[in-house]
Figure 1 (cartoon, rainbow, N blue to C red):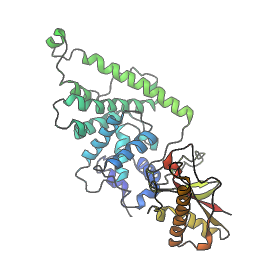
Figure 2 (figure 1 turned 30 degrees about the vertical axis):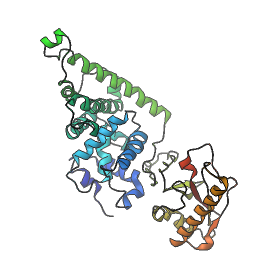
Figure 3 (figure 1 turned 45 degrees about the vertical axis):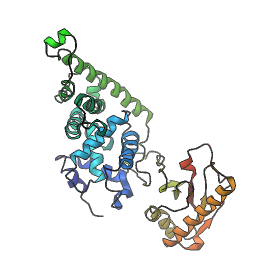
Figure 4 (figure 1 turned 135 degrees about the vertical axis):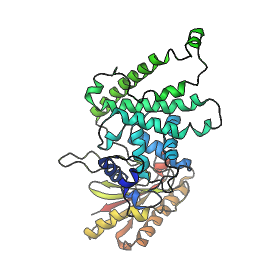
Length: 374
Protein backbone atom coordinates (compact mmCIF):
# COMPACT_ATOMS: atom_id res chain seq x y z
CA UNK A 1 0.00 0.00 0.00
CA UNK A 2 1.64 3.19 -1.26
CA UNK A 3 1.13 5.97 1.26
CA UNK A 4 2.84 9.32 1.83
CA UNK A 5 2.92 9.17 5.64
CA UNK A 6 4.75 12.49 6.01
CA UNK A 7 2.17 14.32 3.89
CA UNK A 8 -0.65 12.88 6.00
CA UNK A 9 1.02 13.98 9.26
CA UNK A 10 1.63 17.46 7.86
CA UNK A 11 -2.11 17.92 7.35
CA UNK A 12 -2.15 18.40 11.14
CA UNK A 13 1.43 19.50 11.92
CA UNK A 14 2.72 21.70 9.12
CA UNK A 15 6.37 21.40 10.19
CA UNK A 16 6.24 17.72 11.19
CA UNK A 17 9.71 16.20 11.63
CA UNK A 18 10.43 13.83 8.73
CA UNK A 19 12.95 11.91 10.87
CA UNK A 20 10.29 11.22 13.51
CA UNK A 21 7.74 10.12 10.90
CA UNK A 22 10.28 7.72 9.35
CA UNK A 23 11.11 6.27 12.78
CA UNK A 24 7.42 5.68 13.56
CA UNK A 25 6.97 3.99 10.16
CA UNK A 26 9.93 1.66 10.90
CA UNK A 27 8.55 1.02 14.40
CA UNK A 28 5.18 -0.07 13.02
CA UNK A 29 6.83 -2.31 10.40
CA UNK A 30 4.53 -4.79 8.68
CA UNK A 31 1.43 -3.34 10.31
CA UNK A 32 1.40 -0.70 7.59
CA UNK A 33 1.18 -3.31 4.85
CA UNK A 34 -2.34 -4.24 5.94
CA UNK A 35 -5.06 -1.67 5.34
CA UNK A 36 -7.00 -2.43 8.53
CA UNK A 37 -4.01 -2.46 10.89
CA UNK A 38 -2.62 0.76 9.35
CA UNK A 39 -5.69 2.70 10.54
CA UNK A 40 -7.01 3.50 14.02
CA UNK A 41 -10.72 3.21 14.84
CA UNK A 42 -11.53 5.64 17.64
CA UNK A 43 -15.02 4.14 18.02
CA UNK A 44 -13.59 0.70 18.88
CA UNK A 45 -12.77 0.66 22.61
CA UNK A 46 -10.68 -2.48 22.23
CA UNK A 47 -8.55 -0.66 19.64
CA UNK A 48 -8.13 2.50 21.73
CA UNK A 49 -7.28 0.35 24.76
CA UNK A 50 -4.44 -1.22 22.75
CA UNK A 51 -3.17 2.23 21.75
CA UNK A 52 -3.18 3.24 25.43
CA UNK A 53 -1.56 0.07 26.81
CA UNK A 54 0.92 -0.73 24.03
CA UNK A 55 1.93 2.66 22.63
CA UNK A 56 1.40 5.20 25.40
CA UNK A 57 2.39 3.01 28.36
CA UNK A 58 4.87 0.52 26.89
CA UNK A 59 6.47 2.48 24.04
CA UNK A 60 6.35 6.02 25.44
CA UNK A 61 6.70 4.81 29.07
CA UNK A 62 3.89 7.02 30.39
CA UNK A 63 2.60 6.44 33.93
CA UNK A 64 -0.50 8.65 33.87
CA UNK A 65 -3.84 7.22 34.97
CA UNK A 66 -6.02 5.64 32.26
CA UNK A 67 -8.51 8.54 32.27
CA UNK A 68 -5.76 11.01 31.34
CA UNK A 69 -4.36 8.77 28.60
CA UNK A 70 -7.85 8.04 27.21
CA UNK A 71 -8.56 11.79 27.16
CA UNK A 72 -5.42 12.36 25.09
CA UNK A 73 -6.42 9.62 22.63
CA UNK A 74 -9.94 11.08 22.39
CA UNK A 75 -8.43 14.51 21.78
CA UNK A 76 -6.46 13.21 18.80
CA UNK A 77 -9.59 11.45 17.52
CA UNK A 78 -11.53 14.70 17.77
CA UNK A 79 -8.73 16.52 15.97
CA UNK A 80 -8.88 13.97 13.11
CA UNK A 81 -12.69 13.54 13.02
CA UNK A 82 -12.95 15.18 9.60
CA UNK A 83 -10.46 12.70 8.09
CA UNK A 84 -12.06 9.53 6.70
CA UNK A 85 -8.78 7.59 6.97
CA UNK A 86 -7.18 8.00 10.39
CA UNK A 87 -3.66 6.70 9.67
CA UNK A 88 -1.89 5.03 12.61
CA UNK A 89 1.38 6.88 11.80
CA UNK A 90 -0.38 10.25 12.14
CA UNK A 91 -2.20 9.20 15.34
CA UNK A 92 1.08 8.07 16.97
CA UNK A 93 2.88 11.24 15.87
CA UNK A 94 0.18 13.47 17.38
CA UNK A 95 0.16 11.47 20.64
CA UNK A 96 3.96 11.57 20.96
CA UNK A 97 3.90 15.31 20.26
CA UNK A 98 1.09 15.80 22.78
CA UNK A 99 3.21 14.28 25.56
CA UNK A 100 6.41 15.99 24.40
CA UNK A 101 8.12 12.69 23.55
CA UNK A 102 9.03 13.08 19.88
CA UNK A 103 12.64 12.76 21.09
CA UNK A 104 12.08 9.00 21.50
CA UNK A 105 11.86 8.85 17.70
CA UNK A 106 14.80 11.17 17.02
CA UNK A 107 12.90 14.46 17.13
CA UNK A 108 14.29 17.70 18.56
CA UNK A 109 13.69 18.38 22.26
CA UNK A 110 11.42 21.25 23.17
CA UNK A 111 9.25 22.31 26.10
CA UNK A 112 6.51 23.75 23.91
CA UNK A 113 5.61 20.55 22.08
CA UNK A 114 3.96 18.77 25.01
CA UNK A 115 2.16 21.82 26.37
CA UNK A 116 0.91 22.92 22.95
CA UNK A 117 -0.26 19.38 22.17
CA UNK A 118 -2.12 19.24 25.47
CA UNK A 119 -3.86 22.54 24.76
CA UNK A 120 -4.97 21.39 21.29
CA UNK A 121 -6.23 18.05 22.61
CA UNK A 122 -8.02 19.77 25.50
CA UNK A 123 -9.84 22.14 23.19
CA UNK A 124 -10.80 19.29 20.85
CA UNK A 125 -11.77 16.60 23.36
CA UNK A 126 -13.73 18.58 25.96
CA UNK A 127 -13.36 15.82 28.53
CA UNK A 128 -13.85 12.06 28.49
CA UNK A 129 -17.05 10.27 27.39
CA UNK A 130 -18.05 9.71 31.01
CA UNK A 131 -18.19 13.47 31.57
CA UNK A 132 -20.39 14.24 28.55
CA UNK A 133 -23.43 16.31 29.42
CA UNK A 134 -22.20 17.28 32.92
CA UNK A 135 -21.86 20.87 34.09
CA UNK A 136 -18.52 20.39 35.87
CA UNK A 137 -16.20 21.27 32.96
CA UNK A 138 -13.25 21.72 35.36
CA UNK A 139 -13.37 18.06 36.40
CA UNK A 140 -13.20 16.76 32.81
CA UNK A 141 -10.52 19.20 31.67
CA UNK A 142 -8.12 18.79 34.60
CA UNK A 143 -6.62 15.40 33.61
CA UNK A 144 -5.70 16.62 30.14
CA UNK A 145 -4.27 19.84 31.53
CA UNK A 146 -2.12 17.75 33.85
CA UNK A 147 -1.00 15.72 30.84
CA UNK A 148 0.20 18.96 29.23
CA UNK A 149 2.36 19.73 32.28
CA UNK A 150 3.72 16.20 32.29
CA UNK A 151 4.51 16.37 28.56
CA UNK A 152 6.34 19.65 29.04
CA UNK A 153 8.33 18.18 31.92
CA UNK A 154 9.36 15.10 29.92
CA UNK A 155 10.47 17.16 26.94
CA UNK A 156 12.37 19.61 29.14
CA UNK A 157 14.20 16.77 30.86
CA UNK A 158 15.76 15.83 27.49
CA UNK A 159 17.57 19.19 27.39
CA UNK A 160 20.41 19.42 29.98
CA UNK A 161 20.05 23.16 30.46
CA UNK A 162 16.38 22.87 31.40
CA UNK A 163 16.86 19.78 33.57
CA UNK A 164 19.54 21.61 35.56
CA UNK A 165 17.06 24.38 36.46
CA UNK A 166 13.72 22.69 37.28
CA UNK A 167 12.31 25.82 38.88
CA UNK A 168 12.36 27.78 35.57
CA UNK A 169 9.31 30.06 34.97
CA UNK A 170 6.40 28.41 33.14
CA UNK A 171 6.31 28.43 29.31
CA UNK A 172 3.80 30.63 27.43
CA UNK A 173 1.38 27.70 27.13
CA UNK A 174 1.06 27.42 30.93
CA UNK A 175 -2.08 29.65 31.05
CA UNK A 176 -4.07 26.87 29.30
CA UNK A 177 -4.76 24.96 32.56
CA UNK A 178 -6.03 28.23 34.07
CA UNK A 179 -9.22 27.80 32.03
CA UNK A 180 -9.79 24.46 33.70
CA UNK A 181 -9.63 26.03 37.16
CA UNK A 182 -11.48 29.27 36.41
CA UNK A 183 -14.91 27.62 36.64
CA UNK A 184 -14.45 26.91 40.37
CA UNK A 185 -16.74 28.33 43.04
CA UNK A 186 -13.97 30.19 44.91
CA UNK A 187 -12.74 29.59 48.45
CA UNK A 188 -13.08 31.69 51.63
CA UNK A 189 -13.93 35.37 51.91
CA UNK A 190 -10.45 36.49 50.86
CA UNK A 191 -10.69 34.49 47.61
CA UNK A 192 -14.10 35.89 46.80
CA UNK A 193 -12.82 39.45 47.20
CA UNK A 194 -10.17 38.81 44.55
CA UNK A 195 -12.41 36.83 42.19
CA UNK A 196 -11.33 33.40 43.55
CA UNK A 197 -8.05 33.43 41.61
CA UNK A 198 -5.53 34.92 44.06
CA UNK A 199 -3.88 31.58 44.70
CA UNK A 200 -3.59 30.51 41.03
CA UNK A 201 -0.43 32.49 40.05
CA UNK A 202 1.45 30.72 42.88
CA UNK A 203 0.01 27.26 42.24
CA UNK A 204 0.84 26.95 38.54
CA UNK A 205 4.62 27.66 38.85
CA UNK A 206 4.78 25.24 41.79
CA UNK A 207 3.02 22.48 39.81
CA UNK A 208 5.23 23.05 36.79
CA UNK A 209 8.40 22.98 38.89
CA UNK A 210 7.33 19.70 40.49
CA UNK A 211 6.49 18.23 37.08
CA UNK A 212 9.87 19.25 35.66
CA UNK A 213 11.72 17.80 38.62
CA UNK A 214 9.77 14.53 38.64
CA UNK A 215 10.06 13.82 34.93
CA UNK A 216 13.66 15.01 34.82
CA UNK A 217 14.63 12.43 37.44
CA UNK A 218 12.50 9.79 35.75
CA UNK A 219 14.09 10.47 32.35
CA UNK A 220 17.62 10.24 33.79
CA UNK A 221 16.72 6.97 35.48
CA UNK A 222 15.49 5.58 32.17
CA UNK A 223 18.67 6.66 30.39
CA UNK A 224 20.87 4.95 32.98
CA UNK A 225 18.85 1.75 32.88
CA UNK A 226 19.02 1.68 29.05
CA UNK A 227 15.63 0.02 28.83
CA UNK A 228 14.65 -1.07 25.34
CA UNK A 229 11.25 0.28 24.17
CA UNK A 230 8.35 -2.13 24.22
CA UNK A 231 6.58 -3.25 21.04
CA UNK A 232 3.12 -2.15 20.03
CA UNK A 233 0.39 -4.06 18.25
CA UNK A 234 -0.12 -7.64 19.37
CA UNK A 235 0.12 -9.32 15.99
CA UNK A 236 2.90 -7.13 14.58
CA UNK A 237 6.67 -7.52 14.65
CA UNK A 238 7.96 -3.95 15.02
CA UNK A 239 11.61 -2.97 14.99
CA UNK A 240 13.55 0.27 14.77
CA UNK A 241 16.73 0.27 12.68
CA UNK A 242 19.76 1.46 14.74
CA UNK A 243 21.77 4.42 13.51
CA UNK A 244 24.96 3.74 11.52
CA UNK A 245 27.75 2.59 13.81
CA UNK A 246 25.41 2.16 16.79
CA UNK A 247 25.06 -1.10 18.66
CA UNK A 248 21.61 -2.59 18.09
CA UNK A 249 19.63 -3.00 21.35
CA UNK A 250 18.41 -6.39 22.46
CA UNK A 251 15.17 -7.36 20.73
CA UNK A 252 12.21 -6.41 22.95
CA UNK A 253 9.66 -9.03 23.93
CA UNK A 254 6.69 -8.93 21.56
CA UNK A 255 3.30 -8.09 23.01
CA UNK A 256 1.01 -11.09 23.46
CA UNK A 257 -2.37 -10.62 21.76
CA UNK A 258 -5.65 -10.96 23.59
CA UNK A 259 -6.87 -14.11 21.83
CA UNK A 260 -5.88 -15.15 18.30
CA UNK A 261 -2.87 -13.48 16.69
CA UNK A 262 0.65 -14.03 15.33
CA UNK A 263 3.99 -12.64 16.49
CA UNK A 264 7.13 -12.91 14.34
CA UNK A 265 10.52 -12.81 16.04
CA UNK A 266 14.07 -14.19 15.87
CA UNK A 267 15.58 -17.00 17.93
CA UNK A 268 19.32 -17.61 17.75
CA UNK A 269 19.54 -15.65 14.52
CA UNK A 270 16.73 -17.56 12.81
CA UNK A 271 13.13 -16.45 12.25
CA UNK A 272 10.36 -17.98 14.33
CA UNK A 273 6.61 -17.59 14.63
CA UNK A 274 4.36 -17.79 17.67
CA UNK A 275 0.70 -18.31 16.82
CA UNK A 276 -1.76 -17.57 19.66
CA UNK A 277 -5.31 -18.94 19.95
CA UNK A 278 -8.61 -18.09 21.58
CA UNK A 279 -9.55 -20.20 24.61
CA UNK A 280 -10.50 -23.73 23.56
CA UNK A 281 -10.02 -22.93 19.84
CA UNK A 282 -7.61 -24.15 17.16
CA UNK A 283 -8.50 -21.62 14.43
CA UNK A 284 -5.35 -19.96 13.01
CA UNK A 285 -5.33 -16.15 12.81
CA UNK A 286 -5.31 -14.55 9.33
CA UNK A 287 -2.20 -12.64 10.42
CA UNK A 288 -0.16 -15.78 9.64
CA UNK A 289 -0.31 -15.05 5.89
CA UNK A 290 1.80 -11.91 6.41
CA UNK A 291 3.97 -13.01 9.32
CA UNK A 292 5.05 -16.27 7.61
CA UNK A 293 7.03 -14.37 4.96
CA UNK A 294 10.14 -14.43 7.18
CA UNK A 295 10.26 -18.23 7.53
CA UNK A 296 9.37 -18.74 3.85
CA UNK A 297 12.29 -16.53 2.82
CA UNK A 298 14.64 -18.42 5.16
CA UNK A 299 13.61 -21.80 3.71
CA UNK A 300 14.18 -20.52 0.17
CA UNK A 301 17.70 -19.41 1.11
CA UNK A 302 18.45 -22.57 3.12
CA UNK A 303 17.06 -25.62 1.25
CA UNK A 304 18.22 -28.05 3.97
CA UNK A 305 16.22 -26.31 6.70
CA UNK A 306 12.81 -27.45 7.99
CA UNK A 307 10.13 -26.00 10.26
CA UNK A 308 9.28 -27.62 13.63
CA UNK A 309 5.68 -27.02 14.73
CA UNK A 310 4.89 -27.54 18.45
CA UNK A 311 1.51 -27.00 20.14
CA UNK A 312 0.91 -25.81 23.72
CA UNK A 313 -2.07 -25.19 26.00
CA UNK A 314 -2.84 -23.47 29.30
CA UNK A 315 -3.23 -25.49 32.53
CA UNK A 316 -6.97 -24.91 32.95
CA UNK A 317 -9.54 -27.62 32.19
CA UNK A 318 -9.25 -31.34 31.48
CA UNK A 319 -5.67 -32.56 30.86
CA UNK A 320 -6.64 -35.08 28.18
CA UNK A 321 -8.76 -32.55 26.31
CA UNK A 322 -5.92 -30.03 26.53
CA UNK A 323 -3.43 -32.52 25.05
CA UNK A 324 -5.77 -33.12 22.11
CA UNK A 325 -6.25 -29.37 21.70
CA UNK A 326 -2.47 -28.81 21.56
CA UNK A 327 -2.17 -31.42 18.79
CA UNK A 328 -5.09 -29.91 16.84
CA UNK A 329 -3.56 -26.44 17.04
CA UNK A 330 -0.22 -27.72 15.72
CA UNK A 331 -1.96 -29.56 12.87
CA UNK A 332 -3.96 -26.42 11.98
CA UNK A 333 -0.77 -24.36 11.76
CA UNK A 334 0.94 -27.01 9.61
CA UNK A 335 -2.02 -27.02 7.22
CA UNK A 336 -2.04 -23.21 7.09
CA UNK A 337 1.70 -23.07 6.30
CA UNK A 338 1.24 -25.59 3.49
CA UNK A 339 -1.64 -23.49 2.12
CA UNK A 340 0.76 -20.52 1.99
CA UNK A 341 3.07 -22.47 -0.34
CA UNK A 342 5.50 -24.18 2.05
CA UNK A 343 6.13 -27.80 1.04
CA UNK A 344 4.57 -30.41 3.33
CA UNK A 345 7.90 -32.20 3.85
CA UNK A 346 9.36 -28.93 5.19
CA UNK A 347 6.80 -28.71 8.02
CA UNK A 348 7.31 -31.29 10.79
CA UNK A 349 5.03 -31.73 13.82
CA UNK A 350 7.18 -31.93 16.94
CA UNK A 351 5.56 -32.78 20.28
CA UNK A 352 7.15 -30.74 23.09
CA UNK A 353 8.32 -32.37 26.33
CA UNK A 354 5.70 -30.38 28.25
CA UNK A 355 2.72 -29.23 26.19
CA UNK A 356 0.98 -27.61 29.17
CA UNK A 357 2.62 -24.30 30.09
CA UNK A 358 2.35 -23.17 33.72
CA UNK A 359 3.69 -20.23 35.66
CA UNK A 360 2.78 -17.71 32.92
CA UNK A 361 -0.23 -15.85 31.62
CA UNK A 362 -2.84 -18.19 30.14
CA UNK A 363 -2.98 -16.12 26.94
CA UNK A 364 0.75 -16.77 26.46
CA UNK A 365 0.26 -20.50 27.06
CA UNK A 366 -2.35 -20.98 24.31
CA UNK A 367 0.11 -21.06 21.41
CA UNK A 368 1.95 -22.94 18.66
CA UNK A 369 5.64 -22.26 18.08
CA UNK A 370 7.16 -22.56 14.58
CA UNK A 371 10.97 -22.76 14.75
CA UNK A 372 13.65 -23.32 12.10
CA UNK A 373 15.66 -26.53 12.25
CA UNK A 374 18.93 -26.75 10.34
